[in-house]
Length: 363
Length: 183
Image 1 (cartoon, rainbow over the protein chains, first blue to last red):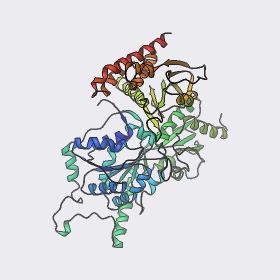
Image 2: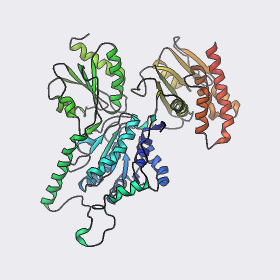
Image 3: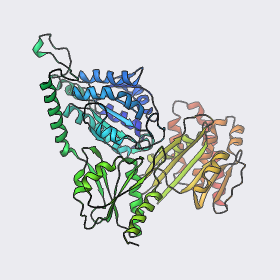
Image 4: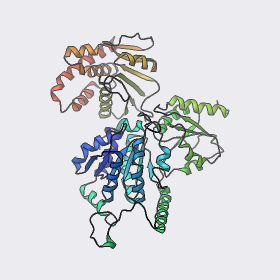
């Protein structure tokens, strides 16, 4: 397969179609408009359906309905749009409906700004709606990773009968890069995947009561609701095996950068430059934000690691909360932050590392 | 070896197209890593627009460097905004038809091309970006001209009647770029 030059948002849509996604509903919002634009053109080619809903709320509920029939379905939006969708996402999680959504996030609360930022970390990983549900949250740092993680997201969603979130920053969403695309799942494979969901999906069962499918976003009987919550909690716990993390020069690092998405990419270049100057910097980059690779931070040799530098395009820092769990007060955690749509510069990261290094008595 | 290029101008001048054509051509013709990153505000035609292309033998970190090797400016505000990002010894390509501001640096190579005027002579102001792309490729030889032309041909695929005009535009630009290179 030869490489192609594609934009992050378009790569989300093409990877989804290749994974067997046959329903998309969304509502326009910058900086993710290329996702629905691409689906609008592509879905008719593969016998799928694209709907531009009258609102975000309508769109997520269309996805809720389509996914309830076992069709691989997705939506996408950007921060304030995702906030509007949070009710529907929570319903999908409660009813245990597999679907995928992408958040190409914005620069602050409210309307925010349309330039790239990482301001939705806590929302995505801790509370994308009411009721304490969780989703796997995947954070690509290249357009190729956008493709690979989108493709995998549908498998995770089906396996768990649970929504999956792709958390994408505006740089990864709007930049173009060479990629290789995965296989296109055939119509037979797509039918088979849908068939496999027949035991729970609303596909037109006979009307005899015990065998009917029920999509229930809640339970009136307290014992049923507790049981559903316990099952969900057990599912969330099982994700530990799905952790994906990239460790860069961690083996001998004295200063370890913690970063994800575009911040990690920029940090990598900074580390290469710092290492040429003899400063032992490394990086831990979570690819899955939930499940979070706490162990990578727990297992650091703190007799050698002198400090962690949390690099994120968010003010206040959010990702730092998960980093701190693994570090557990064994060394200081400094921050290198920007926000509002301003991009993290490699020179800013280099200065931050050098400052820490100087304070530690290095050169 | 990593080359950082910034292209800046008004929305509607074809800034993004220059970057996309160049980056696509690099993807099509080499094993190099390449990124294209657009940056624009909420405004469109007439607003500011700029984009960044990074071409590298190594893995590319951020899709825009802190310092630019090359800068293409199609209007005055872009010159003011980005001149200081060019590294000493870097290349500055300007649309000399409308960029009239002083270049307050003497440590960069300046390549002047009156692309708006040439485009009007060719009969279509829209091709000024293809002329500038030719100037850039002719001067830097970052990607072989025939590969860039192949990409333009592919992208214009459904509008075949525009090909001769664009070919002429591209050639005019190449000639200017090569002339600067050889002098």
